[in-house]
Image (cartoon, rainbow, N blue to C red; front, side):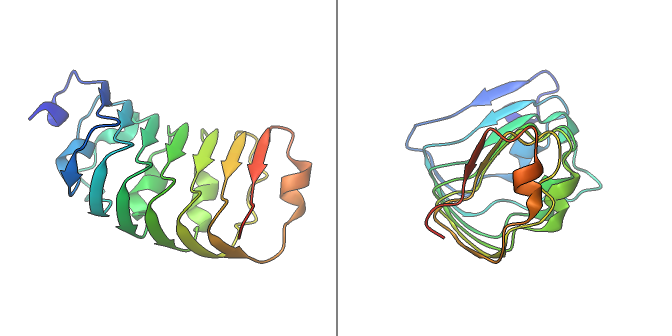
Length: 162
């Protein structure tokens, strides 16, 4: 299968009319760095991947925005230590934004906007790497910590319409 190729580094299937569930095999390439599945009609949950067989530690950018994905973000995403950009905006994802997010030291861009995430905003955004944080149009609540205001790296912060 193409997605399991050991030489595939870049996969862009953006803005097509692809539909159905995202196959877990797409995340099992040992060399995949850039994955763009945005702007399709994929539905269902983001696949769970058995962490003991998960090979995509090389994944740097992942964009699953503008689909019909639902459920919670799977925990394996927070174990991809090289992740620089994660965009899952404009889906139907729900649940809490977990503190595991705080351990992604390479994360520069996080876009979880236009979903149904709820609960408090994690207080860990004092990480020096995060530059763009988009959490608008969810159901987030709570107080903003000083981490947002003390960050020397934060360029864009959008918490509107929560």
